[in-house]
Length: 537
Figure (tube, rainbow, N blue to C red):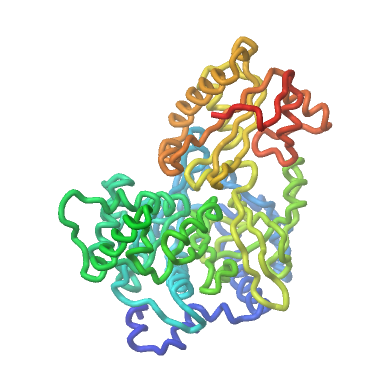
């Protein structure tokens, strides 16, 4: 039975129990669900061509199946699957894919990743999306505030990306109006879709807003431009009154019109990297506090916040979860041959950060898979379900606003392609005074370019930005999204980094080094000046 039929035939209590009842189960019951589904998945996956390949002849102890599996199968990354999945080798999988979903992998070196979704995965995905709608729009436990025809302002990318599957998947259960449906309007540019979405919202209202944090912020900051119209606005009667009032208040107070002046959302969902940068400004603009959700190409939807705004709960039936503690992660980063130990959901601790490891249930391909995301546990204990918030990508990858992913290898390739004769470099993700993220490159430049620090910085920034755009197609969109230059270059004298490494007695990893003291490194330079006296472009 479709969800919209259940809304007519079932009580609110029955609907809530079916979709959101997992919120009330104990942690021990949660683990029972996790382990039962994981045993089924191991049975399917270990007999497949992919499972046999990755297990490499190792035998599992059926009396302690999950423990044995965690001991025998090392943690995996996309490299372990690339040969089969990029060639769409369905014969190697434990279940036939219903659809293949795509995402960015590593810029121009390895542009895409493909992930297969089985029909069972899609069914659970759809079920948990409805649970997300219910939890986000509720004002209390058991409150049902979703109905047929609800209108969704949508900031997602079209198929073959994961967000593109959401409209068609939810339409299997309930008719929602998407503003716009990105798949139906896939020929429109990003800015054209935004303008069309707002035009549709003004003409008929909007109930939900979904987008990755950076896109939601871009849409919000461009609200005035998106609603601007040289002719007559096609606007609903209710919105017309609020729009007229908003224009009056805007002129009186000397501030731009914001979406919250006109729209009354049931819920605002956002996800992706750097969401914490945008939460407060989005809340102020819309008058509704955004709810964090977690999803990914390989994982489908993992979890979501509830009306309580106290962290995400991870769905027990999407994936089997393991967590790499911070100390284990650092040991593995210093020694890539070290196999980090993991803990399970009933072993996480409040205030600790973990790299999440997933095994995709219901015939999924990825097992003990490192998706590269760090989560902080914000509450755990007393047999209650732990709550999480997304922190960032793992330090080996710089993900800015969910749009561009830079690794050490991709940075080396950008430098090589540029033809610049540079020395050592360090690349870090940093944040400006507005909490907007950006790339900060500290790079040693040739002696003949050191006569003018400002000139060297300007030339390097322009030159490297050109090659970032060539290497990573999302880089140009990133600059538009952030409304700022996403790359800041600080030139260093040759030998600065080596001198600093000698001083601290450690080798600096080139991407997000964990113990870099920037002021300490800059003091290695002759003619060092404090940060307050340096000019930054």
